[in-house]
Length: 183
Ligand code: AMP
Image 1 (tube, rainbow, N blue to C red):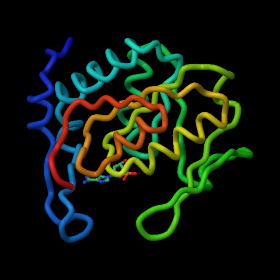
Image 2 (spheres, protein in one colour):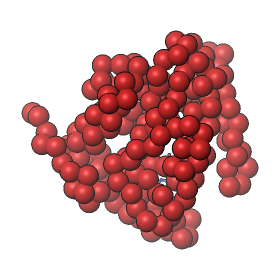
Image 3 (cartoon, rainbow, N blue to C red):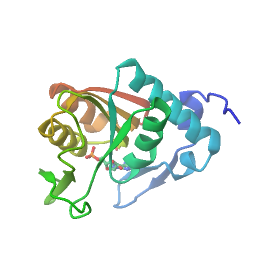
């Protein structure tokens, strides 16, 4: 049952690119085809878990929704807890939250204020970093909850959109399994 460890180039070939979704000019990097491939999913999680292990993650945080797919699996592989960073109004408790700017308008992320013990090393996991807005807001929210956030892991980086540089400027080191040029 052990999956062979596919290389990062082999994983990149499993990502489907859909032009002009959700808007004209956007190249949507669709992980549906990667996670639907057993060895692709298993190897993506193993690569991410190796990176999280190397930096001594106490917990993994994943951003709704696609960050849940990879983040939860990485947490299980490492034997640590998983913290969901949620869209507003989903948690049945009093939450802490953060509002952040989008290209048009604002959005909000929320989490359980008791999910992290003060000083725990929390590694963020998401499928893709574009402008970095989501990841930056998540890092700020996790820090508000008492986490040390110094690493973020992504399956896909779109370096031309500058997200990884923005995160680095906020003290968060970024690793990704693959990069695509353009947006
Ligand atoms: P950002 O906050 O700009 O870094 O955007 C990050 C989120 O938007 C990621 O969690 C992705 O799920 C989604 N996203 C942004 N751009 C793309 C793209 N070109 N293809 C697929 N997903 C994208």
